[in-house]
Length: 453
Image (cartoon, rainbow, N blue to C red; front, side, top):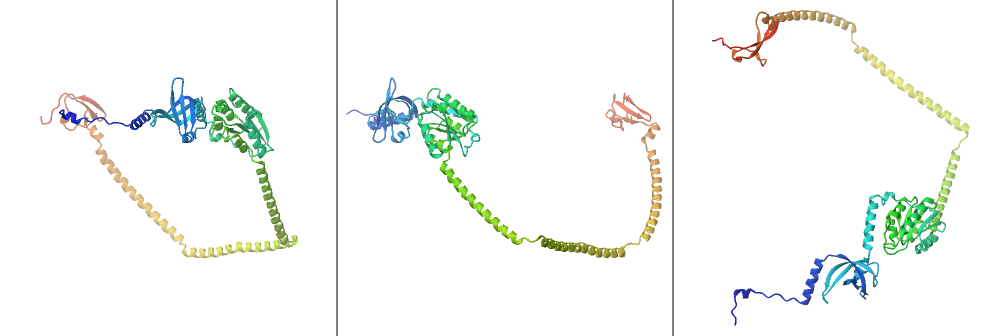
C-alpha cells in the first residue's frame, strides 16, 4: 500500500472518447475551419444511387477526394456529370463518421470554366446597364400586324424549324425572311451581329427574331458578346430574343425589346394567330352591322317625327308673324312701364326737394356779413401780433452775444472747445481760443492766477 498525497488525490484522468465522438468532433472542426468553397477537378467513379444521391471522386493530377451530392442538391444541378468531366463544385469539407473518411458535401456543381464565363457575363451586364442600354424606356413595342418577320439563326438549327412551324400554324400569311448565321463556335458572335445589322439596314421586315435552341453556357456564349448586344440595341427594327430554354438568360435577352423563353415563344409573341384576328374581325363586323342597323332605325324614326311636324311655308310665315307681333307688343310694354314708373318717382323727389330747399338769398347775405367781420378781426389780430413780434425782436437784440462782444468782452474756449468760466479749468502752457467781436485768436497760457490771489 503506497501513501497518497493531496496532489495525487486531485488528479483526474482524461476522459476516454468513443470513435463516434472523435469522428463527430473532427467533422465539426473541419466544417468550422473550412467554409463553403469552390473546388475544381475531374469526375471519377461517378455513381447515381437509387435514393437520388450522387457519389463520386474529384481528382486532379496529384490528389483526389471523395464527394457526395444529396438528391435535393442534385436535382437542381442542370446536368448529370459523366466520367472524366471537368467540373467545379461548391462544397463543405467534412468527415463521414461511419467510416472515418474525409470527404466533401457538394451543394452546387457546374462545368469547369463556367465560373469565369459567369463573371464575364456579370461584368458585361453591369457595364451595359450603367450605359443605359437595358433601360425600360428604350424598349419598343412590337407591331400589332406584322406583314413580314425576320429570323436570325442557323439554317440547320432545330430552333428555325420550331419557329417556322409556329408561324405556319399561327400566321401563314406572314412573309418570313431568314438571315443565316452560325450561332455557335469561333467568330459566331461577329456573324450574328453582322446578320442583325444587315436586317436593320435592309428594313424589309417589321420585327426581327434572334433565336437558337438550348445548350450549355458555352454553347450560348455567342449571345453574351458585347458586339451582339450593341447590334441589337442599334437595330432599327424591334427585336425579340428567343435564345435557349426558359431558364437560360443571355445579354441578348436584356438588350432586346422583348425576351421570349424559347424560340417557339418568340414566334408566338411576334405574330398573333390568324384565327384570332379573323375571329376578332368577324366580331367587329357584326358589331358594326348592328350599329349601322340601329343608326338607320333611329334615323328613320326621327324622319317620321320631323315629317309629322313639317308645316307649309305660308303657315310657318303666318305663325312667325303672329309671334313677332306678340313680341313687339311685349317689348313696347316692357319699355314704357319702367319709364312711367321712374317719371312718378322723379315727380315725388322734386316735391320733396322743393320743400327742403334752403333760402339761398338770406344765406348769401349772412355769408357776406360774416366775411367782413372775419376780415376785420384777422387784420386787427395780425397788427397786434406784429407789434408783439417787434418788441420781442428788440429784446432779443439786447441779449445778442455779438453786441456783448462789441462792447469789449470775449468768449474763451479751451483746447477741447469748452467755454472757460473758472480759472481752475486753465493750466500753464494750455492753448486757449478767444473769440472777439470781429474775429478770433489763439493764445498760450504762461501762468494762471486766481482772483482771490
